[in-house]
Amino acid sequence: MPGLLQTASYAYELLRNGLPRASEAEIRNKVQQRMSRQELLRRPSPPDMSVVVCESVLRRRVGEPETMRGQLSALLEFADRPTALLQVLPLDAGTHGLMDGSLSILTTPENGMTVYTEGIRSGSIIEEPMQARQLARSYDVLTATALSPVESTCLIRKLLEAP
Image 1 (cartoon, rainbow, N blue to C red):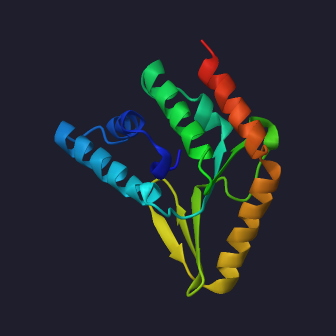
Image 2: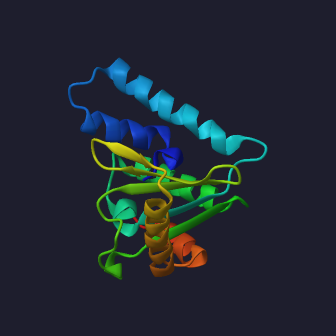
C-alpha cells in the first residue's frame, strides 16, 4: 500500500510490526510524518496520481478488521478523485517486471521523467532517460494487465462488504 494512500491506523500497524525495537513515540512520529506527506493530495490543485495495488495487499489483514475497512474505504475515496486513477493487479496476473519493489514516476514539463524505486530497506532515484523509459514501460505493461478502474473499485467494495 503506497504510503500516500495509507490511513493512520494502517500505517501504525505496518510500522509497529516493521520496527519492533522502535518506541511508541518513534512509531507515532513516523506515522505523523507519513500523514503529513498526504497533504500534497489535499491541495486545491493536487497532482495527477496513478496507482496500481496488488490484490494481495488488499486481502492481507493489517491490524484489526476495522483498520482494513478504514483502509479500503480510504482507497475508494482516493479512486473517486478526478486527479486519481486506481487499479488493482489481480492475483492471477502472474509475474511482472516490477515485482521486487515499488515504483514512483514523476513527470514534469521542465525536468522530464524521474523514477524512484524502493525495496524493503533502500530506494533509488533514476534520472537517466533510457533507464527511466524502461521502468515507465514496465509500469505501462502493469497497468495494461491490471483490472480497469471500475473493476478495481468493484473489487475493493466487495472486499469492504465481506464479513
